[in-house]
Image (tube, rainbow, N blue to C red; front, top):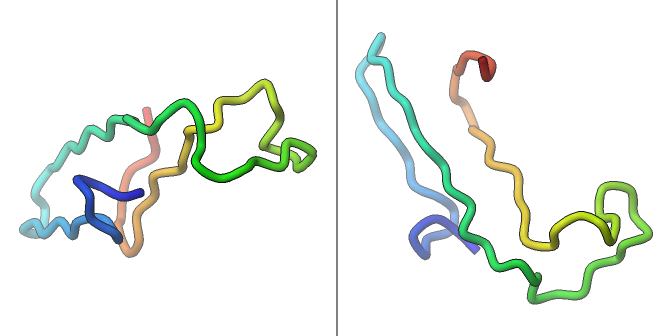
Amino acid sequence: MGYEGTYPGPTFEFMQNETVFIKWMNALPNKHFLPIDTTIHGSEITLPEGRTVVHLHGGLSNPWK
């Protein structure tokens, strides 16, 4: 899994003090291709299998408002 078929995801380069907005869209399948252990906290059977956490490495970003 990755962004536009790449792994790891793309690198964004911007000029200092440039305001940037990025919109992530989750297009993961509803069913995961590996078995899910639903006994682990955070992976309960009531939650969708196709989910992820988008995060930045080295990015200075304001909290979600």
